[in-house]
Amino acid sequence: DWCPDGMRIVAAGSCSDPRELHSAILWPAASLWVVNTDGSNAQRRTDTEVPHVGLRIDHDMPPLDNLPAMAIPDNKFAFVTVQAGGRSSLCRVSLTGDLCCEEVIGGNRSCAILDACSSGCQLLFWATSFDVPGELNIARWDDVKIEQQITDLNSAVLRHWPSMRVQHVPFVSVDGLHLEGWFMARQDASGPQPTILYIHGGPRMAIGCAFRFDFWMLAAHGYAVLFTNFRGSI
Image 1 (cartoon, rainbow, N blue to C red):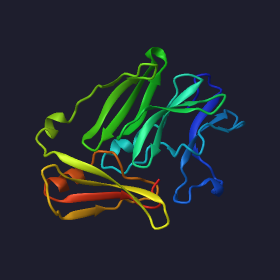
Image 2: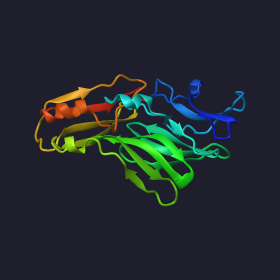
Image 3: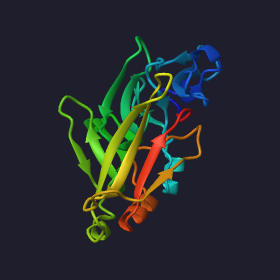
Image 4: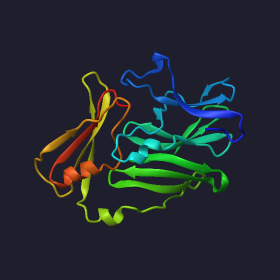
């Protein structure tokens, strides 16, 4: 994307230095970069503590594939979708001066930036969670953060569906690597249940806090669903 001054380009890109790749990641994570229009003075604006710029949550909703990774309201900062494991949040990243990446929209869900404007300190974003399909939201990023959902496309249908419970299941591999998964079942289910293990395609994707129609369909018919981010997920 172009900076408003037309002098710089902001992009998400991967570092080619293998020393900076996490030992558990086979697909390089993307950082935020700023570069002059002639290709000079490339600067990485997110450090290695920012897991990945962009959204790579495995899903069954095609619109996720075409969502932007950033919005640039002025020349000083950009709003960026940042994914960490099974969730994604919105962060404000400085484009000049010292590196600064501040989360402004988070929670146990998957969010993606759509647009931002400096007038009214507003941003438009898309968000989904385990029990809410994607909806549009607006928010303020100033001192008093105000968030409002502005679409409600699915509640009339979901009212007729059974309630679900989702349990976060963190675990540690034999070599100490921390991994995560989730267990989904009907709220009214009890005792042992036939369980389906879902394995996503990886390694350039992760499973996580997003609505999955296929999981709901299986759970509604009496199956529990276990889905995990295995070694190599980004």
